[in-house]
Every structure is written in C-alpha cells, then in structure tokens.
Length: 154
Image 1 (tube, one colour):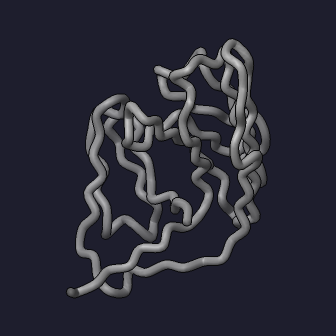
Image 2 (cartoon, helix red, strand yellow; image 1 turned 90 degrees about the vertical axis):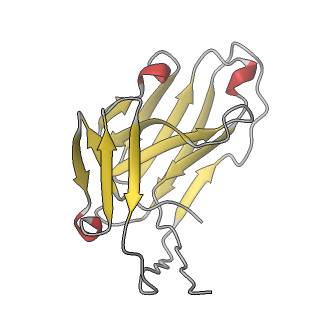
C-alpha cells in the first residue's frame, strides 16, 4: 500500500491534480494549518495499480548524533513530485517532512536543519536525517505510489 499524489496547497492557492479537481478541496494558510476534503465518493473511486516502489533499508538501528539515509526508487512514469513523511509514537498522524519536484526541494520549516533530500525525483530520492536524536525514532514513508481506496455501501 502506498500514496497517490492528489495535489498541494501553496500560500493559500490549491493545486489539485486534474483527476481530483471534482473530488477534493484544499484549504489552509499554506504552512501549518490545512485541510483536505474529499467529496462525492462513489463505488467507482477504486484504484489499483501495480507500480514498482522500493524503499531501503526496511529498518535502521543508528546511534545518536549520527546521520541516517533512506533511499526510495520508483518506476512510475511522469511522476516527478515525491514526498517524505514520518509517523512517530508521539505524533501518530503522518507529518510531511518535505518533497522534491524533479530536483527542487521544499522542506517543511520544522525540518529545515534536520533533513536533506538528494536524487532525481523522476526515479529516486534519498532522505538524509542529520544529527539523530531519540525523537527521530519513527516510521518514514516515501509517497510515490497509488493508494487503494475501497468504498462500500454497507
């Protein structure tokens, strides 16, 4: 299971992907506060695509103050924006850390001094986490895949 890029919010302007323009609304201030509203779901809103996405290594055991690298590669044609998320025990929601659009990075403010992204967003992106602390213990997700959404009438 993975993620499908639906769009993004930049300085209060919403940019939904064309296939989602009639299904989603993005609202917020473009920084910390935002909402995604999904509307008009039907039984036809089911997507299953077998694309290849590989994230390595599957787990790491690192020492504090060191650095960690997690690489992800994909074979999704015409997919140039890839995002990195983390889910920690203290914050169960997925936190967007940053994204790469081809070779241009956008890093969330709270991660500016913590992470770096390298690679070509067309094929692979490596997340580098600097100066590790215990609070960096988390599950890290690379979003470059299509989510399976199943709707039931029951």
